[in-house]
Image (cartoon, rainbow, N blue to C red; front, side, top):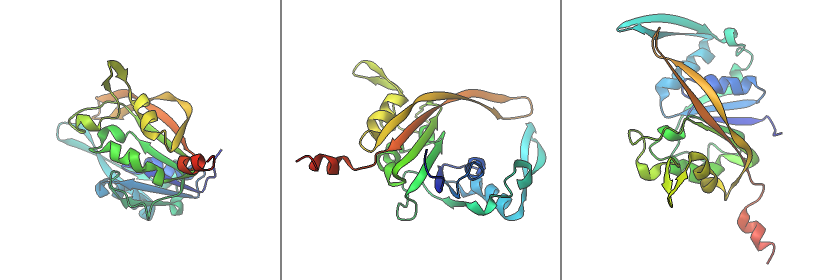
Length: 219
């Protein structure tokens, strides 16, 4: 159990998960994304109560749809969400810090510098707070140079998975509190074409004290 005060949605895209976190009970939910074009949809939804968008039908044909806050029961939490443009590998920790829960959904394997994020992500999470990551673990040099991959390769002749790499990279500041789980997803591309896949979800909790302070107390 954690306090439901402040949560951060890192790589929030169009902001659906940010609204869901607020609806789930958090008093304040902040969404960050590198693309302002993405989260402007969420800002318009928050400010005007509805937003119009287009989805591909086939070829150059686009169907226009409209979504309203009240359709998802988000109208009661709109004042609890906010959105900002930030690069996840170069975050402003003076502005963004001390969250009870940090969620990064399918972000790390689409970043240029994921190791930079993981080396500093503890600055976002208050002691005792949770870090929840999801990833398809589909590492590719199209997005990330191989030296920045978080697992997905052989190490010392053995398979080195994203899960193992995350535990190694986060062990100084976090404890893993639950085994990874698989989440199924379906993404619409066109009217008749969809992408079906699975993401792995990882659960970490920030340690309640700094290891260095703990070790000094025993001297």
